[in-house]
Amino acid sequence: MKDFTMCCALIILIGVSNLAVPGYVHSAQVADKAPDFELNDLQGLRHRLSDYRGKVVLINFWASWCPECIGEMASLNALYAKYRGKGLVVLGISADRKKDPLMKVLEQTHVTYPVILDTTGGVFIRQYTVIGLPTTVVVDKKGLIAERVIGRTDFGSTAFMKKIESLLSELAP
Image 1: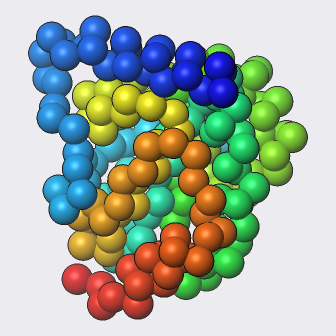
Image 2 (image 1 turned 90 degrees about the horizontal axis):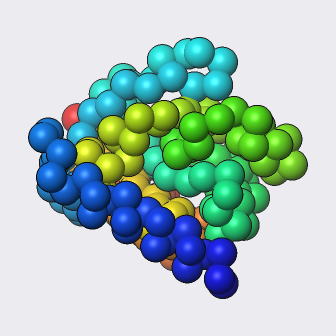
């Protein structure tokens, strides 16, 4: 719990310190259009949110030094495996600046969804205003934010899976 509190405090401090930064965007909230971004994954492949229009996209903001983030990875991996073929895209966006600690966590957790890097914090801070880790944002097929959760999530819970199933069953734009 102490580590989790420390993670949250650090993210809040980073966020508050960036409020005066030119280009700061108000926090993306439920029903808002999800801010587009373009970032590379660990293999160097480019991911742009707008490329996934027509799919349900779950964006999981995390860091290798956040125990709560690591604790939810197994259920997120299982959710991805279950719904990947039905149109669910999962993107893990890491706040890590160095790849070594990140790679250690990924080897231990056997993550199968793409992990992309936000080394400048632009997506974390300016576009999505992440104030605590982990933070999960679910984007519907139209590109609107359908869900925003701060803190550890059980992606295998009945309620969360029903939400994903509902979004997947909606007609694409």
